[in-house]
Image (cartoon, rainbow, N blue to C red):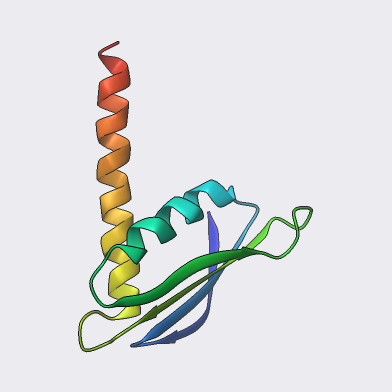
Length: 91
């Protein structure tokens, strides 16, 4: 996965992903939005042919820093994926 950080501050993170499936980033933004202190999390797909995704996260840094919100949500997404994998292996 190729990710480039465009902007980072305590209250804002903007990153760019190339050649990735937008479904991952859409799921990640949904989890980020559930965190206390997150004001906005979302993705923009520049153009379907370029496969360039921009993710932006805006937070209240007194509650959670933008980078920490992304890290916490990535961990949660890993746990959810693991649970899903285990459920399918039992079938």
